[in-house]
Length: 339
Image (cartoon, rainbow, N blue to C red; front, side, top):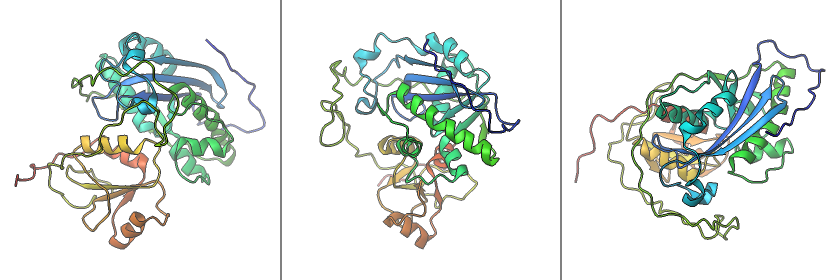
C-alpha cells in the first residue's frame, strides 16, 4: 500500500461539526442503468483536513459486456481475470467505513456502489455523501462548467488519465483538499446528504457483444474517441409513453416526460441520455413548448435551449439534481397507443 500522508497546516480553525474523515471515490461502469455494473473502483482515504492517508484501486469483473470501452478503456480481455465484486467487498468496506463518501456527481457513484453491495447481499457502509459539484457551488467557484477537468484546472491539478478510476480519484482528492479548507475558512456548511440503505436493484443479464480486443489503443482518433474502438448508434426507439406535461419542481419525474440537455455535463452526455431513456423518459434534441424539463449546469448561458427555456417557462435543473430525480421516476399510467 502506497502512503502519501502530509502534515496539515494548523493555521485554519477547524469546524467541530465537520466529518472526521473522507473517502474520495471514483468508479467506472458498464453504463448508467440500474442493471449496469462497476468495472473499476478507486478510493483515496483523507483525514479530517483533507490530507491523503492512503489509496487503493481495483478492477472488477462485471460478468457482462464492459460497455463504453472508448471511455474507460477496459476490455473484456482485461476484465476476465479481475475479481468479482463480492470478492473485493470486504476491502472496499474497510476503505469506506466511518467516512463521508466524496465524489464528483456523488449520487451516481453512490448508486452504483450501493447496488453492487445489494447484489452481494451486503449493505454499503456509507451513511453520508458529499458531491464536489454541490460544494463548488456553495463556494461560488468561478468554473466554466461542472466537469472534473474544470475543477482540477481551477486548483492547478494536472489530470493524467481521464476516466481511469485511480487518476480521477487522485485528481478529485487534490481538488477537494483546497475546497474543504476554503469551506472551513469561510464557515461554509458542507452539503452532506444522507445515504439510505438500498434494496432496489436489477440484475438483468446483458449480452456480451463480442470480446473487445485486448490490444486497446490509448491513441485517439480525430473524432475524439480511442482509435480502434467502436461506438454504438445513438438512434433510439420512440418513447412508449405519452408526455404527461411539464416537470413540477419538488415532485417526481414521470415516464414519458420530454427531457432536453444543454451544455457540458460531468458524466458523458451519451451515457446520461441512455440512463434517461432507460428510466422511460423521452430525450429531445431540441427544446419546444412541449419540453418537460431542461437539464443544464449553466442556466445563465446564452445557448438556444436556455434562451427558449426562459421564453417558454420550462423548468430547469442541474445535472446533480437530475441524477437524484432519475432514482425515482414515477411509472406512466399506460403506454402510448400504437398507431
